[in-house]
Length: 353
Ligand code: ZN
Ligand code: ZN
Image (cartoon, rainbow, N blue to C red; front, side, top):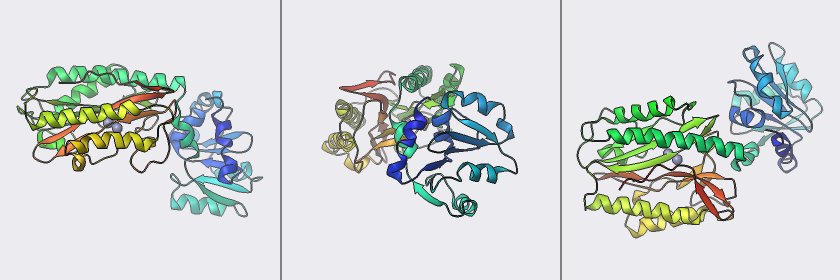
C-alpha cells in the first residue's frame, strides 16, 4: 500500500490538477486498503483524507493504517469536511468514469470558485502493474479455481445439467476458502455454448455437446479468470475438433508473443490470424483479453484498437474463442503474469483433449 498515493500524485501535473476526489470504491481500496461500500478519498499534494460514514468508524481506521491516510466520519458535516480539506486547491480532479451527473452537480455547488476537472484512469493506470503481493493473491485465486474445475470435470457427463456443474464449481471455490467467485460462473453446453456469456440453465448435457466453463475466484480482493472447453464424448473427428484445435492454436500464438514491451494489438492480431486461417474470423466475436486484478475486467484491454504495450507486472488474460450457431462454441482462457522475457501462467488447469 505504501507509495501508491505518492505515485497517484505524480500524475496530477499531467492531468492539470492539484487534488483528486477518488470516488471509485475499487480505486479507494487499491490506494488505502479500505473495503467499505461508501466513501470518498480526498488526495491533496500532501496528505489524504477518507470521508466515510458511521458504519465504518472502527473498520476504516484499521484498514488504512499502511497508506498514510486520515479518516473522517461524516454525518451532516460532510460538505464542510470535504470543502475545508480542499479549500486551498485551485483545480480539483474528479474521476469521470465513476462520478454521476448528480454527484458532479452537487460537488460543483459545494466548490464555488474551484475548478472541477474531469480525469480518466489515474488510479487505473497504477493498478495495471501488480506488485508481488497482488500477484500472490491472483495466483491463490487461480489455484482455487483450478481445483474447483477439477471437481466439476469429474461430473461432466451425459445427463448432468449446466446448473449442477456450475454449482459444483461454485462450491469448490467457496469450500477452498475464496472470498467469492470472481464473476457468475459460466457453464454453457450445446447450443448455449455458442453464446459467449450464457448463464447456466437447466439444460442437460447430451452426447456430442460442446461445453464452455468460464470461472474465477477472489482471494484478498483479487480475481482470477479461466475458461476451459470440452466435448461430451471426447474428440469427434469432425468439425468440432477442427474448431477446438484452431482456438487452441490461436491462444498459443497469442501467448507466444506475451512479454514486456510487446504491443497489445499484436497479441490480438496473432490470435485473430490463426482463427482467420481456419475460416473462423467471423466466429471470434469478442476481445482477445483484458487485465485482471481487483476488477475482473480492467486495463489493459488486448484488442485490435489498443495502442499501448504489455509491461512486466501486467496480469492479463488471453482468451480467443469461436462461436458457431448450430455447432456450438469453444473458448480457451488463461490468466498470465507478464515478465521481462515472456509470461508465467497463473491458471494451470489441464487442457481437455
Ligand atoms: Zn473468463
Ligand atoms: Zn476473461
